Amino acid sequence: MDISHWTDLIFKKLERWVTAFIKLLPNILLATVVLVAAYFIAKLIRKISYKVALRISKSDSISSVVSVILQSLAMIFAITTALAIMNLDKAVASLLAGVGIIGLALGFAFQDLSSNFISGLYMAFRRPFEIGDKVETNAYIGTIEEIKLRSTTLTTTAGLHVIIPNKDIFQKPIINYSRSGNRRVEIDFSIPNTTDLTTVESIIRNAIEHIDGTSSISDIEVYFTGIDDPKVKLTAAFSIDNAEPKGYMTHRHKAIMAIFKAFGEKGIVKTD
Image (cartoon, rainbow, N blue to C red; front, top):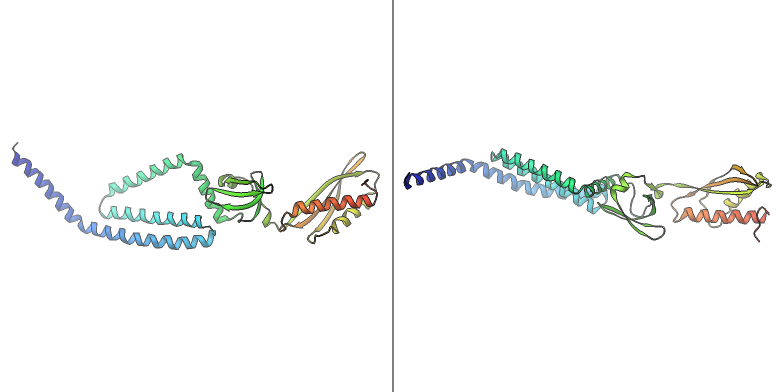
């Protein structure tokens, strides 16, 4: 096979390529227009979705993530459409398969991270608590200081700075004291069985009603719960306004002091 035959083969191959390129040129131009238009549309989608998400979630980080995800989805759709216009169906299939495999691999590799991320998104839209709320979760009681996609930060009543992964908050019960209008305070104690129980009940009610510096106490109840010679067990309970800072511990403290003082004045207990 001589050299002229080789050159003929090369030129015929190049000619076929050029012919195919010229035939495909309108498709390439249309695909380019689609990509350029999609770029600006995706930017507009990101801007609008950010504002909408910010209005719903009240979180800048959540809004940014949502807007970026929507923008990326719009561009992925535009790229696959452009490849389809250029009759590159096999490339589209390979691209989607590659994205799926990569997504699956990343999902397994960053399982905890993705769990926290999804939990953070869910909590951002459901909003079980806000910054400044007093909550109890994962055996911690404190005030919410910061809410992020991966974790939530709270300061406990002891002053500890605790960072809890969002998936742990999402999977376990949450008590939001700031959203409870009233909270029940219960005090358990015992008295001598020689005491007149009717008098004791009256003393306890009067003591709780006249606690100094409180105006939110309501629904006072006294229950005798058992006999343990030589003692009688009872529970004093009342409701307080849960919005007051440190209300539960403050009211409980004042109630115990008021009851003990009243018992001392009536001779039920010795205060000397």
